[in-house]
Length: 211
Image 1: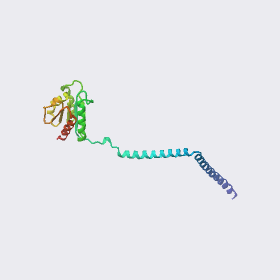
Image 2: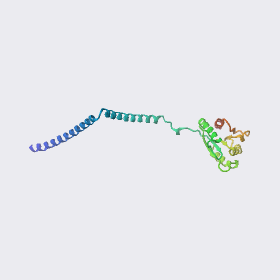
Image 3: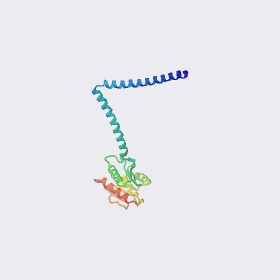
Image 4: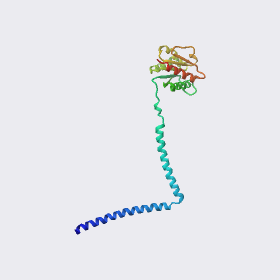
C-alpha cells in the first residue's frame, strides 16, 4: 500500500503545479491588460474606442452594400434580342462622329431599343463606287440581314440595283439621290434635319412589316 501512495502523490503534485502555472499566466495576462488600460489617458482611450467602432461600422456597411448591390445591379448581358438583323452599309468613313452615317446609326439604335432587332454596320473601303459597294452589300445579305440601311452615294446606288432581287428584305435608302426611286420593299429618307428619328421610324416599320 505504501508503494501506491508514493506513486500517486508525485502525480497529484505535478497536476497541481501545472494548474498553478496556468492560473499564474492568466493572472499575469489580466494584470497586463489592466495596466495597459490604466496607462491610457482619457483621450487615448477615447481614440482607441472610436477607431474600433469606425472599423466595425465600415465592415458592416460594406457587407450590407455588397449584398444589396448583388441583388440590384442589372445584368447588361440579359437584354433579349429578336431574331431580326438590321444592317447599315456606309462609306469608308464608317460611323465616325460628324458624318451622316453616325446619325443614321443612332436612329438604328433607337429602333433596336424599340423592336429588339440586332443592329450592325459595314463600311465600303477602297474605291467609293456602286460597283465596289455591291460586294459589301452582298455580304450583308448573305448574313441574312432582314433590313438593310444604305447611307452614302455608293451604298445607296448599290442598294437600288439590288433591292428588286430581294423582295423580303426591307431597304432604307438615305440621301437625296434616293428620292423618287421607290419600290415596295424600299423606304427613302432625306439626309437633313430629323434624320435620326426618320431612320428610327423607317427601320422600325421595316422590322414590323416583315412576313
